[in-house]
Length: 275
Picture (cartoon, rainbow, N blue to C red):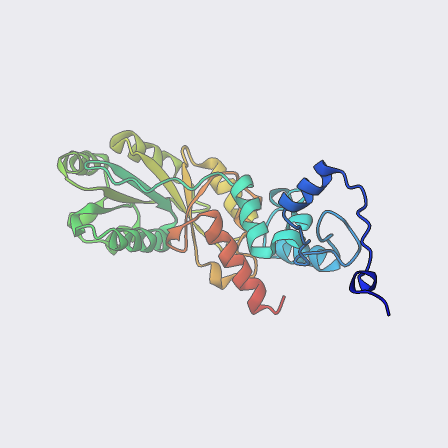
């Protein structure tokens, strides 16, 4: 009968490179992720296709200039998603939204046509919790009666008086200046700028107005530092103003016009349209 030693299997040790064995013990195992892998077989992530091209067309219909999106936008959409890619593109392409002045004795001019400008200035003053005296209405026409006499500026002499009051104030003063779209008003605005020496001149732009109307009006103003875009929910192309001017947008429907705010507005509009 066979002995116990003869029943055991024979093990033959093969030569193994010691450095390779040590590397295999210490190196972590890498498992490639399937998240974001391109179905087209690309090795550098998903590739843009018809969906991304359609998204670009839809954004252009909303008024977004194609130049703001950049050449790599479709690739970014495929890699990051629409919101992240749009936020990144707008942050790189749009001028930064200026901060709202807040210093004691400072003056901000809010300029634009008639009722909509006074309404925008009142909304801004309310959001900042300013006292009633901190909002002035500068108009020489029939619309001057929209504000009480104590908040009304119809002459240079009155403007000088209100400037002195603003200098003594412990808060920001907002002066809404009536500058009609077609009747001009540049000289009146020049006088208000000379008197108040404002830290900023922000023009009120209704999103429903055609860029062809807004552009020449903005170009004719003696000074514009930023825009206040209003009523984007009432127009089919809320970003159309971006195609006509490079002036930064300070406020978008009353909120600071950051790249995130623009991207949220546009993505909400895309979602509501079923895009």
